[in-house]
Amino acid sequence: MPFATTQDGVKLSYQVSGQVSGRRPLVMLQGQANDHHWWDPVRADFERDFRTITFDYRGTGESGKPDEPYTTRGFAADVLAVLDELGVERADVYGTSMGGRVAQWLAADHPERVGSLVLGCSSPGGAHGIERDNAVRRSLAQPDRTAAERALLELMYTPGWLATHPGPYHTVGDPGMPSYARRRHLAASAGHDSWDALPSIVAPTLVVHGTDDVFNPAANAPLLAGRIPGAGLRMIEGARHAYFEEFRQVASPLVVEFLTRG
Image (cartoon, rainbow, N blue to C red):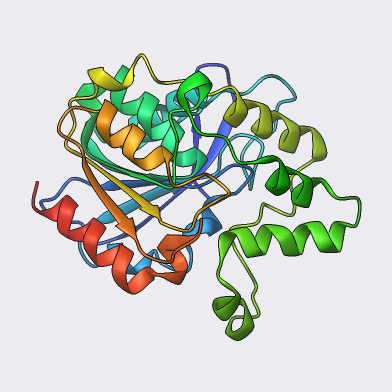
């Protein structure tokens, strides 16, 4: 299994697959407290057109798990360590959920490394971001863990999808994460605030979000699109947080079409 090493000495497990073509490779960034398996259900949709690159965030998967503060900006620096290890000077980037927050910093801080940018079910965070309401927070924090896990699934997917897709689910957290790393990931995502940096993004950008997402409220999508110069916006009707999986037949083609026209 290949690894990249960060400037502070953390080993990052990464994965590469798909077509080697004249196009830029595609970096795919998953959500909070998840490893690269987040992308397993849909990765093949992109491998026909791109060499795809994923990695396990520090704290997840096969990567190192230092017990120290994590930030979304720090995760963006980790992406660069992987790209440098692979000799990739410039890549397209598709980030979903917390991965979209990481992608914002990557594009803002390192514009020379990002070709086109897709931000899925993401948020600017901070004072300007729209937070989930207290009822959602309570459903996730209830002491009955089975009920809390069910609440998370219902935030990710519609009831119809859950009734016909019994799992396993790849979007509800890396089961092998130590508890301290989960807390570090939660703090990293909660501490994200890119509002002031967003206008400096020069990469062609598409913002994608499900209309029925209350886990990361859909109102964040027009905020991002309005803050990033020239960004496009696509809302997927009826989709919840894991729009890219449940509404794969809509989401994957629109992302591929956007990336391949650039």
